[in-house]
Structures are given as structure tokens and as C-alpha cells.
Length: 233
Image (cartoon, rainbow, N blue to C red):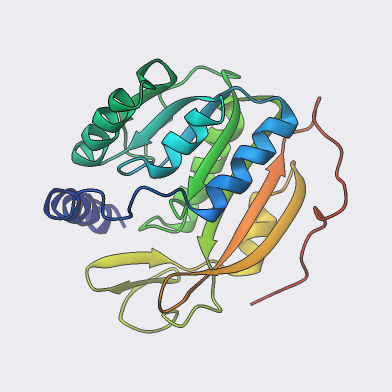
């Protein structure tokens, strides 16, 4: 999977260079949810994985968070830095070029929340995904909240395109690791799994889960609307 991951890095660099701000300026629906979850938890220091050109980063910063935004695309992060500066948010956004196959460049227990929109379902092996979630756990403080989204095995692209093994399929140069529900549950072991909510995005449409989980410790109680969905694929 390492060779595919390096190919994907080059592909994303070229894509951001050719299509600046390719996802537009409006934050995604998951980012809006994450901002609310972080606010409810009192989270101020937040890590974003796979920030890209930063439409969600800026939303989190506008909502009062100080965000460490990581991505393996220096081109995307440069676009984010320019936009953060233009909005007067430079003091609330720190960018770090980083490949999530390596340990996160943060100390233990240094952030209150973590967010990743479709980063975990990129060209990563199941082993690498487990390693990444372990790293997220390491850098979160007790009670820290982790919100992530992934395309799942009910997606129309699952099982089609170029197969790379381990539920990874490639379409149009982009490789996706499609999640079975069992993987979501495995990644939540030792966490409080607050929500697994199905949603759709884009024109295909892409079919995803939005997952909200928290570490044991001080944090908001599970309330109405935060029960785990029963959808399985």
C-alpha cells in the first residue's frame, strides 16, 4: 500500500495545483457538525487530518477553535494559509505538511478534538488506519472528541474500478478504502461511540458514515440524537 500512497500524494498535489479551491469556500456538513460537537465539549485546540485547501479548517477557526491543519499536500496547505491570512485567522490556523502513515507531529494529550473528513478512507491499509486512530487517541486529552467521515461498502463505487486489495478501489486516479461497519466498531474500541450516522454527498452520490466518538474522561453526556445508527453494510 506504500507505493499506492506515494502515487496518491503526487496525484493530490497535481490536482490542487490544477484546480485551486476545488471544493469551494463553503464548509462541509460534517465540519458544521464537528464545530458543534467541539463547542459542546468545550474543545478549543483541534487537530484536522487531511485539511486540503482548508474550507473546513476555516470554519472551525471561525467557530473559535485553534486548528492544527495537516495534509500531505503542500500546495493545498499554501492555499489555506493565504485564505486564513486574508480572513485574519492566521493566529488560529497552523499548517503542517504530514503523511498520516507516520506518527502525528504533536505531543501526547495536546489537543481537545480531532476532525477528518474522508481522510481515513484514503489509500491506507486497515493496519495503517488502526495505527492512525491510535495516534489520534495519543494526542487527545481525556474526554477529547474525534469526528470523522468515511465512504462505506454501501457506496456505488465499492467493488468497482481498479482493485488494490483490503477494500481499496481506485476511480479516476483517486483511491478509496471503503469501510465495512465492523471496521468502525473496531476503531471505537476503548472509546465512547456516540454516533454513526449515514449521509450522502456529491453527485454520485458518495455514501458515507459520520462517526463521533470520545475518549473516556470529562466530556458532554450522550443525549438525544447521539445514539448509534443501526445501518450496516
